[in-house]
Length: 421
Ligand code: UD1
Picture 1 (cartoon, rainbow, N blue to C red):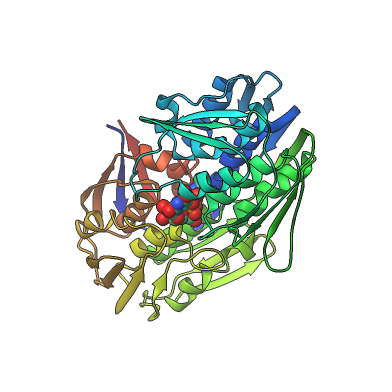
Picture 2: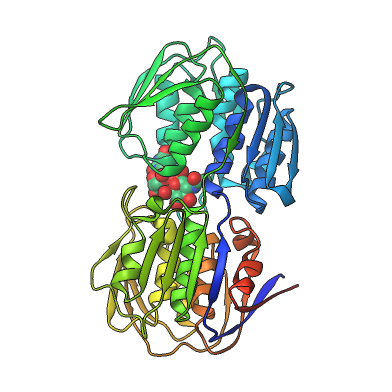
């Protein structure tokens, strides 16, 4: 079992660049299924989820090359004929659901296994199904499988999402780009990664725009072409490294960010006593003498609210903040699995339903803990870096799904962290 050995208590200092966004590259890889011609994706993060997504594309019949040291993917989807994602691949990566709209658009059919519950909640796909039905897609539930059939083509529709789901919005967009007619999505997700997907599709010849009320309007085109596209910076990875620095009382600069994408997160660092400066594409954080509770509820919300993906790393950081901090998780129903692990380091956290109450402790001590999920694992490392002594964090495969060279970046900032098998 792979693990990280962390010798905590060292202030992080220095500069690093942030990787390309996991939550952008995955739907963009899926969307490449729709393109006739060569797609070049730059700034693609070298993370295991990228490889899983490419495995799906290869299975469908595309030719893919990932030059990881240049963070560049080349995709040729001309040969895509297959329309089923096998269970094995479906289980490996939750984001395989993002292939649904693209495969349907490309082949008129798609067969997937029912995505089950996962590490952070049930994650049903009822909104995806209901929207596709409105677009003329027939859906057949067969034991553990779902068949989506659009033999007569997909038709544009007016879709009003009951909740601005990121995945449902992205799937509808992908199904709609080559549909007949116009699709209008009301109450669509506005996360920056959705915007990035739209930019990619438009670069490939799609006709997508957003109106003043945030509705996404997709005018179907006969086909998409190849294109070259650069993935946006990963705002959650940037927030993670800032939280690690704040947790250790350090001072770091994260380069190559979209600083405005960090607007929902940066005020929490300031309220916790850190100084934060943004300049062009860089963010510099200097921790104060001690962290204090931000004294306002940290509630996860859809964009432009505080993102659920940053909840665990901010919690890891605030375990040592003087005072009491209250979190409310409103997006996922099971996203506090890192809490019992954080308490192993001496953190004082009580969870009741959607609420977690963190009472800051002056010191954390070293511990043996497990990554519970991708961001939960990063939150545990955030605490381990501040805990004096030698900690062991296992199940780091979760962390590898979303962070490129996590320990390398932390080492560049002066952390003592080793990977051991
Ligand atoms: C995406 C992100 C994930 C992030 C989340 C919320 C990717 C690869 N993943 O996940 O990192 O945490 O957005 O910002 O981009 N829901 C339903 N029915 C549906 C669809 C969703 O009930 O049909 C619920 C989910 O169970 C969840 C909530 O809506 O409780 C939000 O889910 P959604 O926005 O769809 O998240 P994902 O696209 O899965």
